[in-house]
Amino acid sequence: MNIRTRIAPSPTGFLHLGTARTALYSWAYARHFGGSFVLRIEDTDVARSTQESVDQIIDAMQWLGLDHDEGPIFQMQRLARYHEVVEQMIAAGTAYRCWCTPQELDAMREAQRARGEKTHYDRRWRPEPGKLLPPVPEGVKPVVRFANPVSGIVTWDDLVKGPISISNEEIDDLIILRPAPAGAPDEAGALGVPTYNFAVVVDDWDMGITHVFRGDDHVNNTPWQINIFHALGAPLPQFGHCPIILGDDGQKMSKRRGSVSVTAYRDAGYLPEALLNYLARLGWSHGDEEIFSREQLVQWFDGSHLSKSPAQWDPAKLAWVNAHYIKLADDARLAALTQQQLASRGVTVDDLGLLARAAALFKDRCATVVELADWAEMIFVPVRPREEDLTAHLNATVTPGLRTLREKLATVDWDKASIAAAMKATLALHQLKMPQLAPALRVLVCGRTQTPSIDAVLALFPRATVLARLQHL
Ligand code: GLU
Image (cartoon, helix red, strand yellow):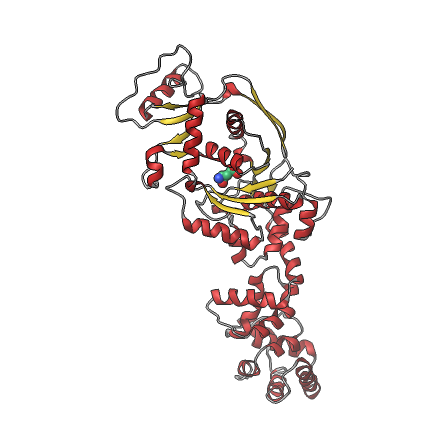
């Protein structure tokens, strides 16, 4: 079997972490079985879809390394195909036009409520043998509805949730095509725009999709989709509905409660391999493995061991995973990322070699590239030591030693060993101890009391900067 999966985001915002995770599962599944992964843009919500969002989604997918084999395929470029299928369905009696006005539908629901019934569409326009349909009203644009089977059970074996069944008696005749809204392209104007549950089926069918992974917010849509697949005589894909991701407060993740977009994590200094690793693990497991590469994920991901229960976003664990990948990352790569971070703060640094040396020195202490940039920034931007640090570490005993050191540093070779030798000589001259000299240097030059080995740190700075920061002594 030729495995084909897809991700079908709606371009109404950024790439959400939940969508990224199902994209990741779909991608890994296709890669595991040597199949294809399709990117489809579900842009039928004309009012809310934007090109900017399409660009952001593609950018975020690329950043995560979720390369697609086909697409992006845009639904709004496939209107003719949906119209063709709708006409075939109307001819076959599996779909019909409905001229109900919104007022009529309101009245219908009102009456149902008054009778204590669950509200539903009463199928008044559904053609049936011997049934007299209402006269077609003037000036009303019809919708097209799917003639859902009135009885029987829809069942599927969900790859994540196991067997699911729902009675057709619970399901309405779904609208599959609506009159085009304002702003829709001319082509839609005459015939209308398909709804999600219909377009998704035509597309999954036409694109030969064999496995659909998506969020379980769609699990209620699947019975309609399965019925439409059957009505079209199309083969059913297998469905896997992944539970939503909960925020660290146990609530549904939302924009208000922290970052939910992939690109926000890029901007916050996370590495794509770390987010990929973390996202994959969130809702799927391979034994106890917490850290795994993209290649291992592809090797292991066969659709089993997907979690049935919602996963909880854990920022501390993500930071731990990211710290791991930062340690492994190549210094030149970290230098380029640090350069971008600094640029976003208005600090322009051209010397990538220096940033690479800074990355080598500081990366063990950093969970994100933002933290790396926090360290590197002190080299380029004047530091403002805290008053209490100055009081604690600068005093009449240490200041003469700092002055001597400044003089020595003005002429020594500018490397770690020579700086260390100058410090040692200074200690001997003034009978000082390293724990007196080093903190004072750190506070004055770095604006902080903790750093890696101070000789290595000083060697990163331009000599002139170090001398200037010791100048006022
Ligand atoms: N456009 C839908 C969404 O973004 C796609 C759902 C699906 O994968 O079928 O939620």
